[in-house]
Length: 146
Length: 146
DNA sequence: AATCTTATTGCAAATATTCGCAACTGAAAG
DNA sequence: CTTTCAGTTGCGAATATTTGCAATAAGATT
Image (tube, rainbow over all chains, first blue to last red; front, side, top):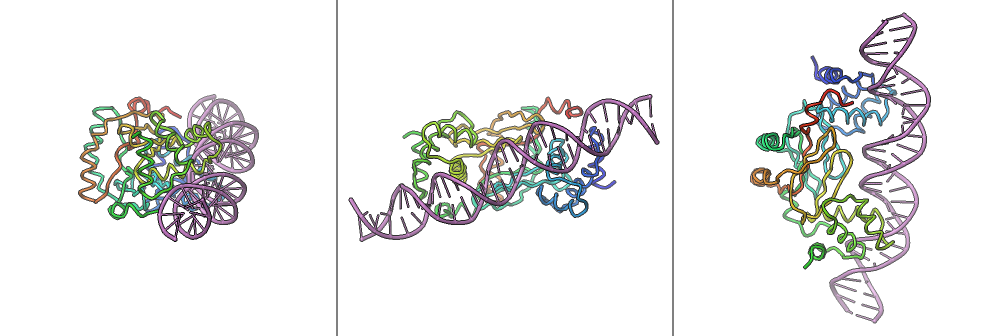
C-alpha cells in the first residue's frame, strides 16, 4: 500500500468522502519532497486538472493537519509549509532575524512529549515542531541589522 | 523605570527611532494583560490618537519580536497573539481540533534550550512556545468531529 | 440502478497581513 | 537652532487565507 493510499484510507476510515480533488491533493503532498506550501500543492494539482480550487486545497490541508495526518509549520517570515507525517520527524529551528531554517534532531523532544502527556494529558505533535530563536550568525551581529 | 520605558530604551539602544506611534504601540502591548492581537493593539492605540496605521502596528510588533523584546504565538486556528517578554514564560498547548489552549510549565523546556544551544549554537526563544497537539477531550472523541 | 442525505466544492466576498513608494520626521551634526 | 539624511509612516495595492452559500456529488440505503 502506497503512502497516498494509506492517507486516503485514513480519511475514509474517519468518515470523510474521497473526492477526485482530495485524491489529487493528497497525492501531491505525499509526493512532494519535503515541505510544500499550499500554493505549490495547488499548482501541482492544477497541472493535472482544472477541477481544483485554492480554497479546497486549504481546506484539505487543514483537514489533514487537524486529523494528525500532516503537519503545518509556520516558518516565521510568512512561509507556511505542509508535510505528511511520513516525512522524517525533525525540529525546525527558525531564526527570527534572518529567517534561516535549520533542522535539529527531534529526539531532543522525546522527554518533553512524555511529560506533556503525563502532566497535562496532552498529546503533542512534535514531529515537525518549529522553534523560533536566533541563529549563531545573527546573535553575533545583533546590533546592526536594520 | 517602567516596563514600557525599558522597552523603549532597548529600541533606542538598538538604534531605532522612537516615534509617537512606536511609543503608543509599545505602551499598548506592555499594558495589555497577557496576550493581544495586532488588531486589538491597533484599536487600543486608536482610542488615543488617529495617527496610527494598522501597517505600522504590524511593523512595530515584528520589530519587537525580531529583537527578542516580544513574542508572537501562532494559536493554531488563525489567532496570532503578541506578548512582551515581561509576561511570565509558559508553554502554550494548542489543541489542533478544538482550538483550546492550555498553559504548561515552561521549565519543561529548560534542557531542550540548553541542548539546542550546545549542539546547534541556536538561541531558542522558549518563553512562549506554542505546541500543537490533541487535548485529552478531543483524543477521546476523535472519530466524530466533522 | 435510482434515491436520498449531507459532506464537499467553487466562487466571490471578507479578512488578515505584507509591501512599494512618496512624503515626513527623529536625532545626529554643525 | 537649522540642516541633513536615513529610518518611519501612511496609503493604497498586492498577497495570503478564510468564510458564506448555493450547487454538486460521494456513498449509504433500498
